[in-house]
Image (cartoon, rainbow, N blue to C red; front, side, top):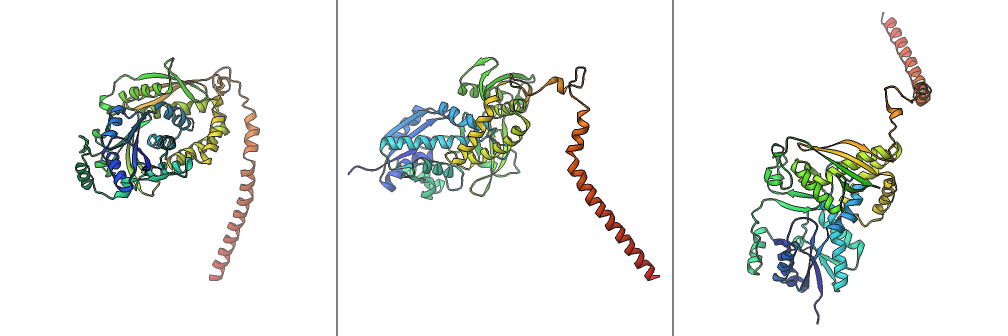
Length: 419
């Protein structure tokens, strides 16, 4: 009888390598490993071969950077997505992509289940499993690390017993997740919210004392909310993001230290490096301020916050995300132009912006000669704008005055009586 198959999201680390053997022994599955390149800097071919070495019947490797950038990072950028106003959702944005590819490979290979390497206290288990349920509710989802209940020492013993190679950097105190939108670091000393993050927690960005003394200026062009060129050179989105990560990292841009409210109800301390994401989001927001009307701009900020929450909470494939996307994409039709950003000592400051759709009118804004604003019109505007406030004040201040008079009359009567 042919064994059932499971597709495992395989990173090449200890947990997912142990998971290959555990899935075979616990469930009797044949394991197909799926390794992805989303920009974390790993050798995909090495990971592919390692999966075979530890017992997978098949190993599939996919370069998914372009898929990630075009289909997941762009919608997040258009919505200026920052969870709790700080985190640009780099890890959260890769999970729906990984889920989609897991489901696609499972369907192609005739697998009955998919598996991931998440623990029971993180956000990613929710993101994976809700996404997979949305894409193919018939697939079984298995979480070996959450299920097996092994301590770290027990896991190492199991790996040694089964002949699974242990990574040489296992003594690294930090847990790292990375893709082209950013690098996340947690655990170790970072679990103490009072302790300053050591330099060892960072890899992409220079400390301020090692950044150049001279600022660097960059011009980013957007077309309908999409970044299309850097310093006048058109380039694919992935290349543009990778270039900004490098440039921003040199200037120490993109470090984030965040006490984060996890979906499962606990707070965690995360350290992120997101040079390109933070530069692009800041530039995009400034171009929106130039091209969107006041009403659209102000309402969109509410929609942006909701989109960040939806992404963080693993609802990428839900109707709410599609509805928010529809509004956001409508707003982006006018968000075209160029933004000038100054990188210096950890900062990324927008110092210039221009657009053919600019709503900025210098003749109306200027205080110099040539001012076209009708100052006399302000008198009637203020009168009508404040009319309801004035009426309310007249009604209630009159009542308050009458109450004060009544109290004073009562006090005099009491005083006379006491005499």
